[in-house]
Amino acid sequence: MFPTTFSCDSPDFSIRCLGTQQVYQVQRQCLVNSEAFEGMLACCEPAFNTEDNNGTGASSLAEQPLVLDESEETLITLFHLLHSPPAPPAYLCQKDRQLFIGALSQHPFVSPDLLLPTCSLWSILRSECSEGTGR
Image (cartoon, rainbow, N blue to C red; front, side, top):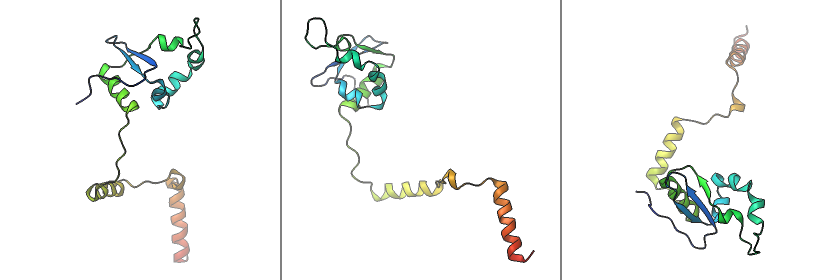
């Protein structure tokens, strides 16, 4: 079940859903702190810090919403996650730990730095075998 509405305290930025034209009031800092929006908003940073003509300090970005071509459901879910992130799990129960360890053992991690090309590996094995047999 996904949330169907979004609101937050002290919004200072607007985002409009292109598909529905719905405008959402959000906290800009919550967006800037996310990887999804950080780069998108960084290119507009100088405009955000400039004062408007009447000296109120409001920015042109705050007055004109950022338009995103995402579904309304996606935007609402994203805004909820960014404004009220879920708490990380405090612990894994023993059953979950065993499942995790089992999954790791089925797919062991091998560093690419430790891999040798097959032809090099065979030549090393041949030289070790021939040294051990006196050949």
